[in-house]
Length: 229
Image 1: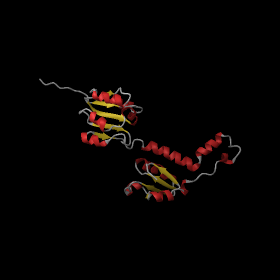
Image 2: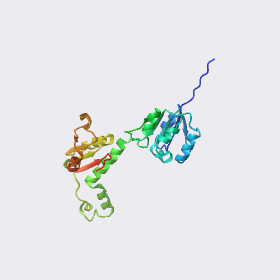
Image 3: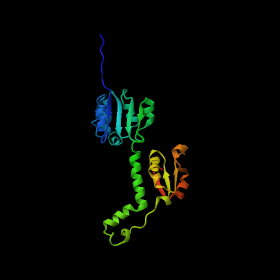
Image 4: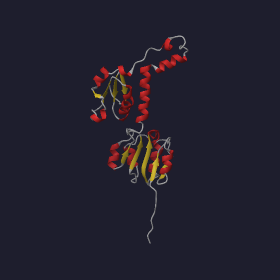
């Protein structure tokens, strides 16, 4: 007689979950979701030492979960049960996770680098155009009751994109999406600085320059990369 078991793999989930409730509901049909009751790193470490997650195979964490567990570093990884096979980080970067001990333990790490590219680029484009056209100042002057008293409520004439050189500092996923959003506005020229030059097919006509050249030539600079000036 042969018996089989159909145990669902267990996922340790760290929230908060704000936008993926439907996905997690669907996922719960094929996995068992467990959660930590820890309120801080010390309590989480105690849970690990007590063997609470000994049969968990995957850890899913959000960016905000660092407030509970602290950074996923060598100390925590050393306490992970042998059952842990992967960590799924719901964020673009993985600076909250020390990769070296994970490599040593052969634990896979994934992130989500492009999820917020579009939303971030939309916001950047809105702010950039608002500055060029003095939208925010116009709105402020209008609320101050200056519309009937002064021409254009006293707001100075804005700048047309066609007269401007746009510099993009950082041409990763977000920087490239910002460029794509701004191409139809007809900037006089688009230049960019990146840690390394992009392949020509990814540049889409943007010109690669040094950081000093970008700072000296640009009328408008969009920053999507950390850099020490």
